[in-house]
Length: 501
Image (cartoon, rainbow, N blue to C red):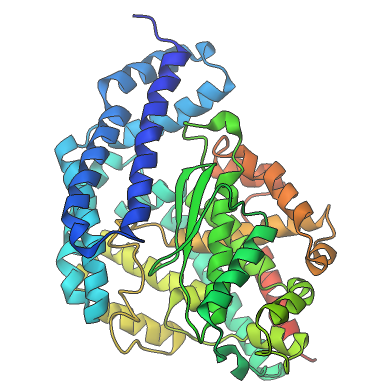
């Protein structure tokens, strides 16, 4: 039977529809799923995951890939781009036994429920058996996934950031560690410590949520195509460009956490809501990598949400929304307090200068775990030691330590470095944007439409049609360069701390 592009894309659409179901189930599991519903949900997730794997790596897909690899001229440009992506997934997973993959999906679903119990108990030992099962599955699957990577951990990195390796990441980590230490020394020895006691003032959660909703909408997030719910850990669910849901969490005495968390997730949602409609029901309707997806959430959170020009325009709205809570604090004082840098235990609450250190801890633990240098049982002690070494603080319990993130019970080993790569990408994009747009003036004006339009044109609409390396080179004219991150952090923190010569 002749192979046609129409039939090929129809199969790809079936896979996409199953992926949307899995995403919807994940959103429900992390927002409104009753606690006792976990085992049934695990069965459902495992079943749909098994069907998705069967289509992604089955004989029909294999036949399409073989045929169109030999006859690429029979696909248009979009078809060839889709082929590149589905072939990558096929080559990764087609040899994995379907029953094992379904068992893995069930394990991950169960582990996320156990994670919540372990957090309540403040005890990693409750979760440890589940993490050991997930790690065992990953190690079982790595030989199927390997494509010439030097180490087992390289294999996992490649799944989230195609082409990224430990050999590339290690020098980046060292460059940033040295740069962070240099900035910290400068602001400590030549700067002025900002007033920040007002940052813990009580702001009602409904006021915080209103602030987040208003701000992210003006940043371009479309509530006709999305939703803002509450969850233990903020996240975004990738259904499709007309259903990109975000969640957030709130703390009465930590309005900064909720504000930046909401703005961050809205960056993910904004990306997803603006993919090229021609990419619907294909893997092109995605970012080229998790690092690039994070670049847009972090561009929102850090390079807009922590920009001095942004607060010059936003502070009046902020004061109006919060009533008399901050009437005694002027904008320069507020911004300086907002930008205070200090060691924190919780990654999602860290300031952008110390945030990379949180990622480096996780990166080094994951690397050691999968390259055979440690075990799951040893992770809590190693976690505490590295927090002492890099940040000078130690968690009092596992909930504010190793249990703070859902990534490991979610099976996402190799994901954390993409947060750091996202910061580097974002700084580089901002630098490029500033070459053609008056970014500072636009941020101060409160009208972000030109910034959003630039992102739509140069990044969002491209989806996954380019590789990460191709997209960065096309948008900025050069490969990934951490110097733009260091330059922005140096300039911004010296301004916030009023550094003098």
